[in-house]
Length: 285
Image (cartoon, rainbow, N blue to C red; front, side):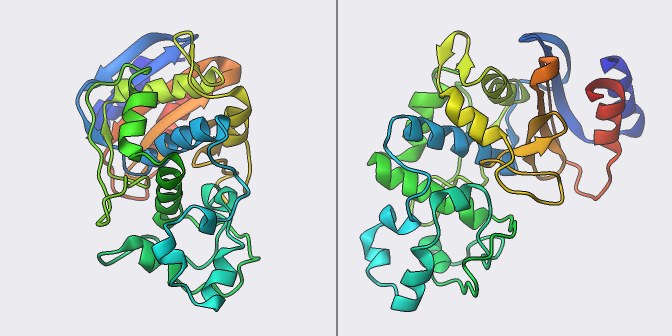
């Protein structure tokens, strides 16, 4: 394991990596760059939402195999045509969490994202092909808000950020005012790592249980196959472990069998694989 060689690749190639941290056996052993400043997480936000969902699941507030229609506001569900209602009755929260709903475009548009989502044409709701998009995560966030009867942003601040000792953060909302669980959050490298440590340790952080081991095991195991090797509940399968991913090469790799967590935030908007290949060569493999 050669963190210095990884950093040398970053600096020599002028890759736009803001900062990185490497933890072994729960201890910070190497860091690079800006690990305290806020940076856009993009789809890493989805994993934060998964943790929030897990807390509510553990407390019996929400169920994986309930239809999305059970939790969405009635002003939307009552307005559905029978055709759309029959489709959405078949869409469970589990399917949203695993990105296995066909027909949704990547993101919602307009001034009412719930209405937009519920009007999407879904030809074959029985098709469980992997379909990665932001609408799935947004609907999970709306359902969770309604089930909790509490603002989801406030819930995350109280039940996740506080025990993880995260005090500096930003997040966005939809036009209707719901927490936007698909993207829009800003955290530091140092604070993203805390989610990796929490999941690596089965839902415990600094001796405090935040999530059940049952939920962590489900969320981080393969629930839905895809070309990348598998997907859990807004968490990606990676080799012997799993990863938290965001657009533009944002990564937090968790390898429980090696007791290793590597996180870096970056903005590299291309199809290159150089950064991950360097991380694998020098640290992960």
